Structure formats: structure tokens, C-alpha cells
Length: 473
Ligand code: GLY
Ligand code: MN
Ligand code: MN
Image (cartoon, rainbow, N blue to C red):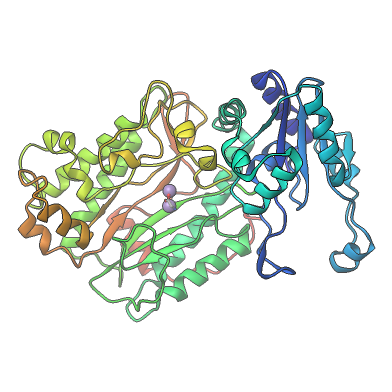
């Protein structure tokens, strides 16, 4: 974990933002996989981790703003726990490591909150995403399930976002570690992408790299020749020459910071000319949108710039026609690029998305658009130094969407449907980097992962590296 001053400072800044009341942060419990004692890998709640740092199940953190006091509620380990898990530090010792001197048994939390409420203190809590937490909170606060589900504090949500959206140097260093792990995951995936290999072999191998060098993957790996399915978790295809393979994968570090990188490569290691045309189009979108990523710029404009590069490239190969500014204004690009350019990234790979996309990605000035595709933008608001975001343009040939738009007569002035029909077997291409917004522009984080046609082809021709822990752990 970070130094205790980091957590003390975060809690103090939250108190200032919130002004009054009590902020309750429920840490996660173990979650059962297929029977109660067989649990998933434990993942702490990211907000609890941010303010309280302790990566153990069963804790709750309280920030009493009115009385300027912080608490951890949890239980010390008993002899049973020690037999199965080994000697553990005491709750008091763990709390001290994050600058907290007040601890109490977990069972005391209900009484503590009841007393606070009886004194008129408001209990602020964040939206929940696990059923067991909702039930616990309903019991703790004497509320119904729907009151808990709908009762999150907008003041607390806004305060947490204000703090967490600006990453400090130590957090950026963690994210760069996660990107460096992704470097090895992605270069390994490239070198394995040969005809006859099953997608699952590659997905399993690179998931192992994440586990060996940091922690679990930061989200289930997307790896497929069918890259037109944006979140494709099916890894059952045998790779074939002439197809492209998308790998969208990232790692978590031991402190639970993430990376989220996508590369798309030609199976066998050489682009054919049709693949190169579309690849260069997406490459131009990421290179130019990244050059335009800077503080003060509304991210939706950067998205639109990426869309413009996509349509210009598609016009160049005859898939689109007409005036490309008008095409983007009409939304014709959404046939090929139906998602947002990027999103916030941090401890959650879509950072803080559970607090509500409209709170995280939009603000008073930038409201969500209504147009198909553009409405899906997770992030639209003005960029600030310290944001870590992804830029991830793509170009996809989604047969069902092509049929739908064509049958509805959509964008007939801009799309050469007859030519598009011949790309229905193409799949999709996405290229994604993780980016820090700096005072003057931006910086692509981590060791550069091959991205140009020449670099991808060169990497795919190289032998696979063995994992070296040096420099990672
Ligand atoms: N990994 C999902 C995404 O790129 O947002
Ligand atoms: Mn991704
Ligand atoms: Mn992403």
C-alpha cells in the first residue's frame, strides 16, 4: 500500500469536499464461486481501497466529517482463521498503517450508525454493485433494498469523483506498471497469433502473464478473430490466415491499479493490402486523437476527430462517399465506429463507472448526446491534467448492423453499401492506449507497445520472450 499520509490526506480532502455528515464505505466480503467456502479471487472495493488502503475482506470504513474522526470496523482474526491462513496482523495494527487509530468490531457498526442518525447526522453512501452489500446496508441503515439502491448520496459521489479523477504521481507509476505488464501480454499475443493456434491458448497464456507479474487481469480478456463483436469473450476459434485477431487485455497491479490495451494483428504476421488499409485508418484515428488530447479540450470533440479520421480512411478505400464532415455530423460513422473513443481509467478499468457514467464522464457543460453511437460515449467532458484515460478508436464490420442500416435506408448518401457487403467477413480492428493528460498535452503511459504496421510485423516475426520478473515485481 501507499504511505499512510496518502490515505490521511485523501480522507481529509474528502471531509473538506463533503462538508458534513458521515461517509460510509463498505469494503467487500469474500464472494462465493460455486459453494460458500470456494470463493472467487478476493477483490477489494476500489473506493474503500482508495481511502482506507486495506486489501482484506470484511471491513467497513467510516469518515465522520462532523467530528473529524475516521474508523475501521472489522474483526480480528481468531485461531480458526490463523490455522487456515497463517498469522495475521491485528486490526489495530492494520488500521495504524493507514493512519487510523479508532477500530471497532464489525458488529458495532450498526449501533454506531444508529447513534449517529439519532443525532441527526446524515449517512452518505455510494452506489452498490453487489447484492450482499445492498442487503448489509439495508440492515445497517434500517432501509429497504430499493431505498439503498436508489439512495446513494450525490454529494458523496461528486466529492469522490473530484478527488479520484486526478491521479497523483504514485498512482500514475502504478498504472504504468500495469501497462508494462500489458506490454508483455500483448507482444506475447502477437507472437502467438499464427494459423492453427486456438484463441484460448493465447488468452490463457497472457492471463498467466498478468498473474505472474502483478495480479489478475483487469477485466475478462477480449481475444478473437471476430473482432466485430466488441466484447468478445469466446476464445474457441482456430486462427486462420487472412483473418485479423483483436486482443483487448490489461492487468491489475498488486495495489489494484489497471491497464487496458488493445492491439489487432494479422494472423500469420503479415498484413494484406485490405487489412493494411483499414488498419492504417484506425491508426490514424488513434495517433491524431492522441495528439489532440490535452487539458481544456472537450473529450467529445476528440471523439469526433477520431470519427473524422475513420470516415476519411473509409472514403479513401471506397467504403464511404460524399462530404465526410457532413457524414460525421449525420452520424454515418457509427456504422463502423459505434462506441466512444475512451473512458477514465484507474483502479477500476472503467474508473468509477459504478458511480454513474453521467457523473464521471459528463458535467454541467457537457451533457450526453442522443444520437446512436455518440450517446454511448462514456466520457465527453473537458479534460484536466491528471486524468488517466484510454483512447481506443475502432472500425468494425458488424453484419447485422450493416443489414439493419441498409434495410432502413440509413446514410445512403455516405455509405457504399455494395462495397461494404464485401467486408462482412473482415471482423474488426481496435487500437487502444492508456494516456495521462498532462499540463500541456498528454503522455502515452508505459513501455510503447508495437502499433505501426512495420512494428507489429517485426514483433510478430521475433521469438517469444520468457517472463522475467526483474523490473516488474
Ligand atoms: N476493455 C474494455 C474497454 O476497452 O473498454
Ligand atoms: Mn480495452
Ligand atoms: Mn477501454
